Image 1 (cartoon, one colour):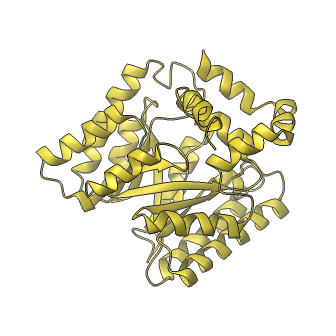
Image 2 (cartoon, rainbow, N blue to C red):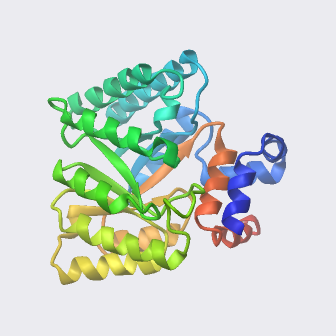
Length: 308
């Protein structure tokens, strides 16, 4: 029920306008989004790096409506890669294909992302581009893009996909990605999908997450386990220890501003941790989708608002 509500809220222009103009909305966004400018996110990245955590930077936005918007987005990511290298930050980038122009012109999106992956691969040290997963209407095209990009000479290891454990097709998708040695971020999933293509019960989503996690950790490819669910984290840690999987052969991933205590604890225990830091003006739909993914975060936000 709550999941459906927050997804609906994320799509409401009227409520978005109210939230973005309110003092409480701005306070909430300040905790979970690193400002609206590149300088803001670079500052946040440096602070996170100082505590031993890596970063994946996401310029918020999706479903651009014209080539001008898409080109502006890709140029911003080029600047991000340059700044990451110049400042020596432990950071990579995450992007959505619809932010690169997929809905406008598939060839435009392909050219934009191809340029970014080629740039990341040519850097010293080499960087990495994570192609985020969107709703099910984009799943196959997104995976096709990633396979195509990864197969280009010199790109291996510099581009990866996201797999959502609530999708019934994910086991098959994982097998195909692993066969090519493609890096995966495993998460639970944040979009509303029908029962015929997505598990609806939390127990089923969790069970599939654990099943896929085990395949990823045993693959020998460097993957990201994206979750704030302590049960999933403990299952991952237990499996890695039992199977003697090195702690530096994969990483945990969490969202900026959520469970910082747990993030820092994992680092102290010797596990790798990467923080997904979003920035930009499109914070309202992003936050609503995060609440849809884990409604328990409502309590976390409420507690945060009472703090100084």
